[in-house]
Length: 399
Image (cartoon, rainbow, N blue to C red; front, side, top):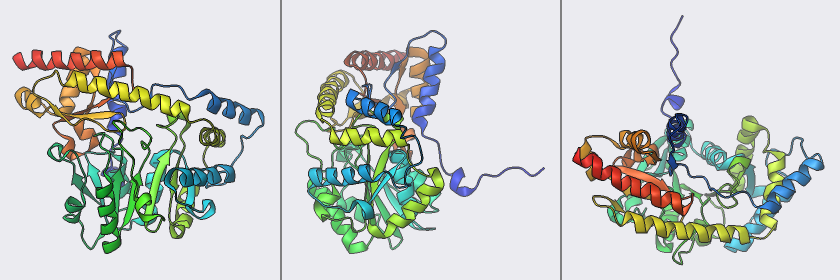
């Protein structure tokens, strides 16, 4: 019998490691030990009631059948209307809007529709691992843009220009950023848009955290700069904004010329998005945004707790998050002293101390030396978890 060898496009891809860390933590919990979860980027809030009510109504009306591959027209139209309200830019719902099964599918389908064999995809690293995975699936070459703490984890036009080649086909932006909590300033976004105009590459802007902003920060999108979708893809969704992670619904705004390719890919992958989730999402966009604002206020308070508690610890460094619900913490001094890597350190913290973070290499090769804290949980959990981190660092450093 011949041995199995995974195709290169799959062999180079790693599953999202946050779920592997969660599995380790759950195994520890099954022994009866408590674990504080600061590893998963999932809102701890419930989906707002009016959204759940809309889903129940859709069920009662038997809207349980196939929908169009790109989503129900009502939702695609409402997404276009929301873009006009939020960005001041008009798009055509029939030519530019694709509803997807989560943002992951929007990223993958858009990348597959644009990138060909051997073409390069520049993406932030440390960053959301789906960008690199999508590039591999497309047969492209992932090119990491190293986000450095010394630079405030900024992705600048000057830094990007050094990575651009004749093979650059796609540049991925993510603001507010996972895992660094950075919000891209207007000048950086404009500068990267100018580079795209000069070199002819596409921009994929992942904006799923765009309402979650602190300290008066403002979200600035390439769509604000361009005012159109020419060689621009915007990926967004409902998971983070409306606490709808399990509903698995996102969307992509794409140029007219690639929508037919996105249609084919989505049709082959899933036929259509979940019917009930689409009616829930329609209610989310049409209904009151007060639940979103209330969640953001709580995230802001939690961010302040993270900063307060981390500031008490020695031998670490971090950048004050301005958006999303993550902080990336440099623990390289601790790791060097313990002679372990970030993944080993995270496992040690779970098994010996009952607190779970995400190791930096789960977010890319340049994440080594870091751990990510998710503050999508209670203030009590955040305070206790970071205090345990401080205790662990002190104890382990002495051993």
